[in-house]
Image (tube, rainbow, N blue to C red; front, side):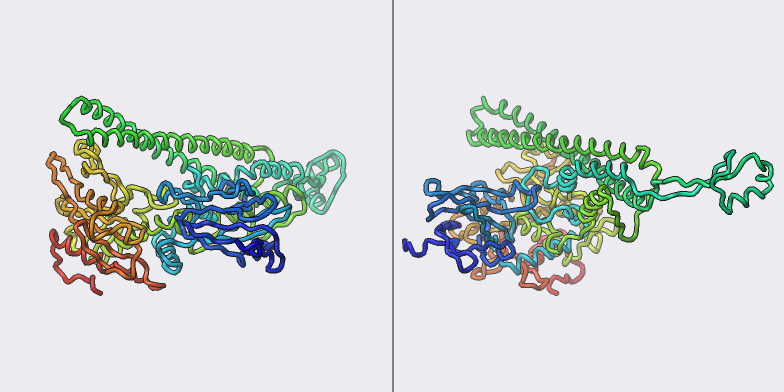
Length: 625
């Protein structure tokens, strides 16, 4: 190694005798430039492609170096930071290793800060995460599209999140993000309230009292003394003027109104947590029932020699999967219940505060203008309530209204989901007047995204058919269970959870006709499609053809999926639509900054052919417009 290059240039002029380098997906990237001014960190930007392994190494230096990766200044997000110490002995640290697919990737696309500590000095740099299979313009367009589709639904849930992709089990609950902040400031919050109560702004209020000795006589007292009632008390009683301090002051009225707003957030948060806890309990109950059924089935088939070993192993693997799922659900429930208990305690304390003698005498009236008081309690309480108002009313940035804490592959999955809806609208399928997209989605947005099992309904313009678009729902593994749960769909194959399943029904008879599957892969074409042999994605597509349907009378229709489309972000060297023995491979992505989705026309045509098999179009379709 050339020793003359073993230094880091600080602020473009000072050379320091140490060198770090990033290793991203097998490639090395020397960190040659850093700055002392954090505001200039973007001048030292190092690019990382998402989902690739990332490590940082110490290549030269005499002293220990501490690296704070993904530096944050909000203690609520400190769990997103990783601190590593490097030296000649411990000279490498792994920051991300792709072991479990894409689900645990810690950063969304965007810019992040890192800090380097060397011999009591601190330097800064920035790393940017680039989308793997989309360019920045396409990714921005996907954000805009999702923002448009989800406007007004995800905004409420994300206004407390400032774009840091949290990994906590509770981070998908919008109220939890608020309560994180509130719990941190709660001691200061009540200290400020106590200071206000003990040293309150007040107003002098004039009143009058009948007394035996004249003390404070004014014009009103004289007027009263000459009145018929006053003459009755002549030389016996005198109406003396009194001034008393009243705390029903405009400052206190304003603060009481704001305290009630905080209380309402806590009360609504309680309702949200109870609702989510009920959902968790339902999931746990279903999983426990499923576990019992699989356990019984394993015991039944274990001694039957004619049942294949592969079939027995499949049941055992399913049992292990359900056990892990149940443990995760129990952990989730424990965390939610803990948060609910804390919330209830905070609710009771604030309710009791507002019911004490001081606050009961104060009216509720929020001030329109700016309120200024120099008293310590008011200044502290004003500071906290301003932050509360900012969290509860500040509109997120346009690109952050979508579920920003979700990884790119999931955002792409959402994008394809809404593209499917657009394709169906091209075929004159629309949402019912009293059940628009926003209304239907409302029930499926408990997380910062679209919930597994989301099912939307669209009606044909001629009223002959309707379609259910189901997102990421696993079909049952036995016809018996499908019938018991009235879910009707089942499969004996390994893969039973298509990303998007489109089910066609007859409006008049409510009879199921057929299904179509769109599987979404945020991967390059070569990893999902091979003309010779089969990839894992191709085998997955083949399994979806094994989905069957059992009717209420017990009649089973096998292989009800007409076809399978695998949507992926695109390959400029491949055909837009590739037919194969396993189904179609279709490029789908935004075309630059326009509103056109590449692949939407082809998707519309394929769905049109399928629907026309059961409900021939009586008028010319507008799919080519």
